[in-house]
Every structure is written in structure tokens, then in C-alpha cells.
Length: 278
Image 1 (tube, rainbow, N blue to C red):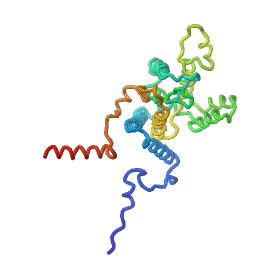
Image 2 (tube, rainbow, N blue to C red; image 1 turned 180 degrees about the vertical axis):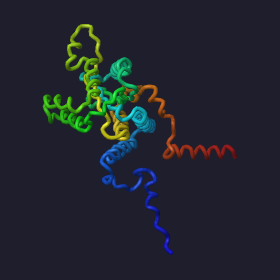
Image 3 (cartoon, helix red, strand yellow; image 1 turned 30 degrees about the vertical axis):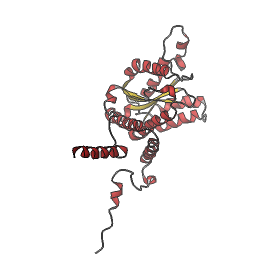
Image 4 (cartoon, rainbow, N blue to C red; image 1 turned 180 degrees about the horizontal axis):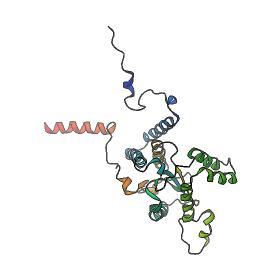
């Protein structure tokens, strides 16, 4: 009698921790795995406290989608045309709009601050909208249209005509409200009035989730690593990640990893404790 061959499934007890052919996965799952692997590579190059922050960020975003539904969760990018490099000024502007405007539109939100290459701050905000922004929106085509506009592959006339066709009425309503609040496009006259009050952001792009909650979580969490790479001495004390209270309660960063340095530390404490008992 010969010994039975080892079970092939044992190497795959955890997802993608063995030899797995990613190209055989469905398209959406393949993209999720690509994002996860990219984030894991970033996590190996940053301090442990930031690795915990990225891990907690993933759990919070996945919780938002599970709680509010994928049709009510989107990613909003907020930028400023002027070169605002002062973190306190950017924090002041974001706090103003998040305190006064966000509660009217969103049930919850989570944001990540990041420096651009030119040094200016901008924010990536995962939001839970009160209205369904996914139904009636061609998410993939809309995302591609925005990329083509950024790369100047389409004219402004084509862009503005198609964007109305691809976005749902609820999504367009939120876009319009932010244009009004910030004095943009058809509300530009608001900025020119003496004494008029408006939020000093020049772009607040909101898009529904393209694929899955896991892909969004991996996409957003990698900005923590990028923010750390572009961090300046004057940024000390700035919180790169923030959220509403209900999201912050999902997971905190006060935990220890099961393996790695944490496991070695616990083993040394055990040895030290044994010696003290003797």
C-alpha cells in the first residue's frame, strides 16, 4: 500500500495564501486580488501603526457597505485649485464642510487626507448617501468618461452631454448641491458677490462603487501608505484618517498581530514570566 498523496486543498486554507492562478478568477475577483496584493506590498514598507490603520480602514469600509448597502456608498474626491500646503488650513476647510453640509446628504463618512505631488492637500471620502446613487448609473462607463476627460481624450461638449446620460438623477442632484455649496459652474456668481459665504473647494467628485466593497477598501487604504511616503516634518500631529462616530466604533487600532513581531514579543514575555515564577 502506498501513502495517500497530500490533500491539495491544504495549501489554500486561507484565500490566496498559496499557489493560485489569479487569471482564472472572474474579472471582479481578479481586480480585488490585484488591489489586495498591491496594498499588502505597501504595508510591508510602512511602520506597524500605519499597517494597523490600513487594516482597520478596510474593516470600516466593508462595514459601511454591509450596513448601508452598496447602492448607497460611494467615493468622493475633494480637491482645491490653489496650492494649499498648510495642513491646518486644509483641515479647517474640510471640517467646515463636513460639519455643516455632510449631515444633510450623508448618513456616515470616512476620509483619508493625502498630499498631491505638488504638495497640495486633498481628501478621499467614502460616504454613505441617504439616496440610492447606483441604480440608474452606468458606473463603469461613467468612470471611464472621467478618465478620458482627465487625459483630454474627449471634448468638454461630449463630456457634459454624456455625463447626464450616464449618471442617475440622485447622483446628479448631489453633484449640483456641491456646486451650489462651493460656488461652482452655474453658481459661480456666488463667489463674486461681496460677503457671500461658500465652501472653498473646487472639485467634489462623487462616484458609486465600481466593483465590490473589498476593492474599494483596498483602493482607499493604500492612500495611507502614499500619505506616509509624502509626509513632511510640518505634518507631524495630523490625523490622516477620520470618520463619523458610528464608523469609528467599528474597529480601533489598539490590537496586536497574531504573527510576526507581536508573536515574538509575546513569546519573550512568556519566557520572562516563567523565569520570574521560578
